[in-house]
Length: 244
Image (cartoon, rainbow, N blue to C red; front, side):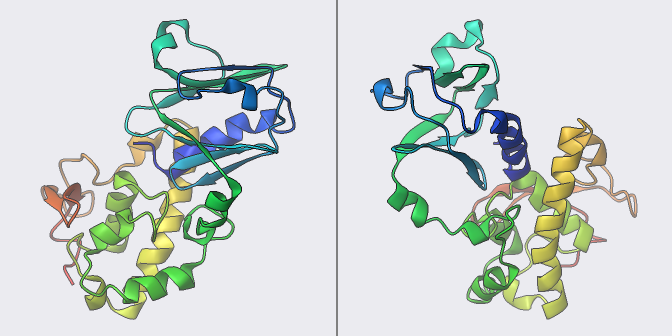
């Protein structure tokens, strides 16, 4: 599943269509395309792993799920997987094997935009308050909770925890105040590094523990284990990541 930084990069690639009128609508997710055709795309917003196309009278939510993708041109060999295609005067945007849903303005107003780790509205103080209400939660579950760290996925989780030396099965309530602050800060910091490396097509070269065999610090074997309530795979070094 694409993580937040990948979705932000997608938004940047689609941004050129903002202010343009939709000339054609394709795909098997929209039952009545007439409600979108001739609408002007006013804004593109992202929230974690979700993208919102904002028009005057309708809004579209796009979630790429596990295997979704997008393109700036129509892929003829993927026609059966086309969920939504929007054509504009100078190009288009096409979304494949993903979830597409119409949402109203009331739905958008209920989103806590301050929980998005890559947003200018990111509010670390609010996240800290929420975390302190869940002292028995493992840090691996906390980082993957989209209500706390919207946009963080398994890569960011693993790499951020290694950077700050925290074992993924540590409990939130056991973390010293400084480590809790580092956890919150690094979730955002690594997300922006992820975006930079992804854009340069060098992301995998920077993995330190994710799907790695040996710790880059001590040389010990990297542990691979399903952790937390969500049973998502964690990669960590028992020597360099402390269990709190």
